[in-house]
Structures are given as structure tokens and as C-alpha cells.
Image (cartoon, rainbow, N blue to C red; front, side):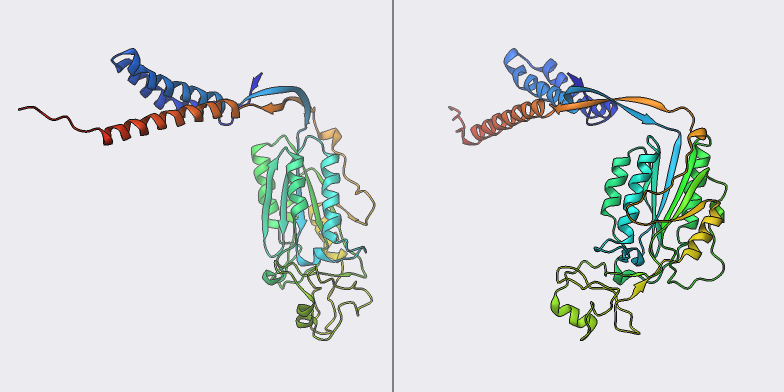
Length: 358
């Protein structure tokens, strides 16, 4: 038997101490043993609630986690162009990015991970956490921005946010190794003023890489919309055109959203990789660039000589949680008390007042 509290122990004490003190006061004030039965029952119910909150469980042994002195920052492109199907079989650039994020977590076991995504705006999707499974679960659910909300994007959208997060990490944990990965296609569809750069992040981390996705031939992009498109809606989007008329675009399916259309041609718009931008970002950051293709593994920098000593942490595993047993017992006692109180109230209401003899 072990305990895995559902709340911090301090909170459990704070929540249970007042009712416990009040019930004990009732027991002390009770005139006889019969009068003490009800408050004793309440005290037992409170004790059972405390036991339930303490989280009784059957232990299953321990597992060992490896924690290293590394923070990994992943910047991921979720603009509409990441939905481009360059690779055949409907696979998108975003699909390949997701595969590479998994490869990153496997390379840097025991690290902490943070995920920044960008489209029309940049945002921190995952703060620094030491749980790769949580990161991967979120990454698998990522989609590109909603098409109707898209107003153009720039591959430099996350530059300020990345610099801020790196600076905060360096301030809080100056001795940790920081690794940065930029995953995107480099395509720019927004008009911006001035020169954009990632140089604000340069020198704030130890290693990293820019990973590029897409092809020079490009691929069509499906819309991302909460609506379900059917055949008659294709006519509204494409007119009399057929989305499969373009040799580079597969045909649309009635169960899938249509492809984005190039207004100039009436055919599916084609997005291509912009390696010039990607190489410039790599130069700004001071890291290497590699073009990613399916069914290959990314080349990830080895930080073993700067990683410091790995720390093994033993973590108790739980086979079965038993908090529900005392919780049910407490519920039954509370229900009993409520029933007795209701019955006593009913008796008082139906009792006939005694006549006073004159």
C-alpha cells in the first residue's frame, strides 16, 4: 500500500481541519452517549474523505527516468502552406514535421521541451516541460491555421517570441544547454516593412538546426475549415472547374475540404519551398540547414560533450488507485446523516402539539 495524494497535503489539512474541529466540539458538548452518535458518524465521514484525498493505491514498482541538463526549443510552422501535399499519398509538410519532432524527443532523452508555433501570429503551445509524451500528444493534434482567418504570414513571425523564451531560460537556468530547431517551408505571403531577422536569438543557445520542408515543384493545399464540404460546395469554390484538372494536384474528395484556388488560374494554388529564406534564418541563428524528405531521419546536433551528467530519477508506478473505496464509504455515511435529519424534520412537522390543561 502506498499513497499518491490527489491534492497537496497542505491543502487537504486546510480543507479538513475546520469541519474536524467543529465536529469534535459537538462531541465534547454532547450531553450523553446517544447524543454523540451522530457527530461521531460525521467525524468518521470526514476521516474517510481525508483518506480518499490521500490517494491510497497499490504500488507496482519503480521506473527510472533519465533527466538531462538540456532545454529544447522547437519552432514549428503552422501556416496554410504547411498543408501542402508535396510528398504524395496526401502527406503534407506538417505530417513530416510531426515525424521529426518525435525524432527530436528520441535524440534528447531526459530534456525539457518547449513548442512555439507560428502562422499569422506566434504563440507558445508548450512551455518547458520534461514530459515528451505530453509534447507529442499535442503535436499530433496540430493543424494549420483556419483558412478564413489567414491574412498572410512570414517565416520570421516567431523571431521575437523565441528570443524572449531563450532569454528567460538563460536567466533562470544559466547552466543548462539550450538547443533550437526551426521547422518550416520558408514561404512568405505577407508584406512586411523593414528587414526581418532571427539574429536576436543568436548566441542565446548552444546548438540547433533549421529543417526545411516542401519541394521546388510544390504541392496543392487543402483548406482548413470546420465545415464539411460536399460535392455541390465544390462547384461554389471551383465554378465549373475540376480540382483534379491540374496535373500536380490530386482530386478532391467529398469527405475532405477542397484545395485552395489560385484566383488567376482557377486551379489549385501551388506552394513551393523557399530555401533562400530558410538558409537566411539558419545564418541568422548561426546553425546549419537541411532539406527534409520523407522516410529519412534528420541529422540532429550532438550535445553530449556539453550535456553534463545525466540524473536518474526513480518514479513510483501505480497499479490501481483505491481512493474510491473510502470515498464511497464517506458518501454512504453522509447520505445516512441526511436521511436521519430529514426523518427527524418530518417527525417534527407531523407531531401534534400537546394540549395544556387548564
